[in-house]
Image (cartoon, rainbow, N blue to C red; front, side, top):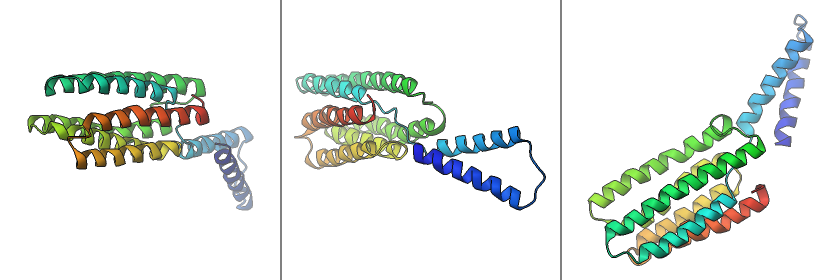
Length: 216
């Protein structure tokens, strides 16, 4: 963030010197300062990273996913298995949204504008594709493909959104994608195990790393 501000300030100074060299008409000092501030703000919005990714929130999501994997593995029917994971998905979304909102508030970061908006919009397409594929695979009776599909597309969502965040986030997404590909190639034997390792283990591991390095 400091480097972005320094670069923006340097460019603003260069622009000011350029105006002077060109012999342009003098501009009021207040107007010039406001122009420079607007330029710096735009540069920061485009260059800053979205650091409100939840660390401890991710850990909580991981813990609930481990519990869901244990419950789901003991279900007698595929329908009840799916219900367990749908409830867990809704719970995870709620936890993640609350954690992001609180962390963004503490850091004074906007969630629905600037780089936060880019983060959210980059996350949504793979996530929505996962919802559509869930319905399609369920209707086709390909239940065993769901764990790998979920992990793969969630990983894609985190990876694309991570373009606008800290380096740990796209790395997290890549690990989810690798685990999803493994689950698809080895299904159905690794379904709930892969879900526990991914939505449970990876969330806890990387959530802890993010919390320690980037403030909760």
